[in-house]
Amino acid sequence: MIRATTKDKTKAIAIINETFDANPSVNIVIGAGGNRSKKISRLASYAFIKALNKKGAYLSTNKMGITLCFSSDDNSFSLKEFISELRFAFSIPVKKVLETLKRESYIKKNRYKGKHLYFWFFGVTKGGNRAAFELKNNIFDYSHKEQLPLLLETSVQRNKDIYERYGFYVYHEWKDSGGGHTLWFMMRDVK
Image 1 (cartoon, one colour):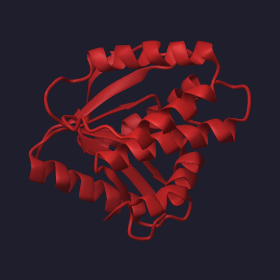
Image 2 (cartoon, helix red, strand yellow; image 1 turned 30 degrees about the vertical axis):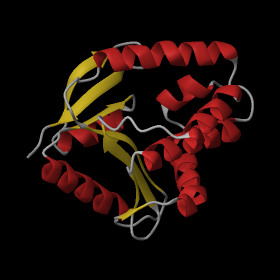
Image 3 (tube, helix red, strand yellow; image 1 turned 90 degrees about the vertical axis):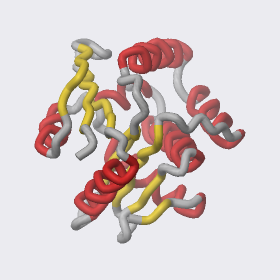
Image 4 (tube, one colour; image 1 turned 135 degrees about the vertical axis):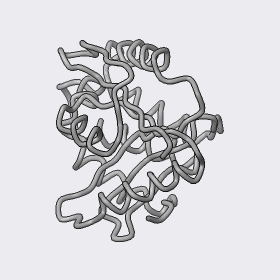
């Protein structure tokens, strides 16, 4: 696993675009109308820049997988992050911005409050070989080294089941996080 740099932005956005097009949580935020690819790209750009700013953007060594994972106590701010967040916000309808702010407020209110590593995005392109295992193992090692639990949210049942196989458990469940989808708040304790 290698720490991503600004030079990796295009590749990172391409991986996130490919892997999150059908994600219910992403679709709740971006909506069904307009240029979906553009909206996902802007969301991916914002997420990548935010994680990069927090020193939490990583690529697999074959550059076919990405994870955005950073410490919850990193409150660093960058103008680039703010601008990319605004670009994304202006690409979706005002109603979606308001819904997203309300949704994020609920998530923050119900997220575990102790210091943790936030496992925000994880995606591997088709044919990524062992990239998923490389990223997973390195993030788990990072969690162990820092003695911090890993936290994530997912609205994809298949992903929830996979995370549970790797030691995550549900600590909060939001039955209708939007569009009738359940959002699972998950944690993996330090091992």
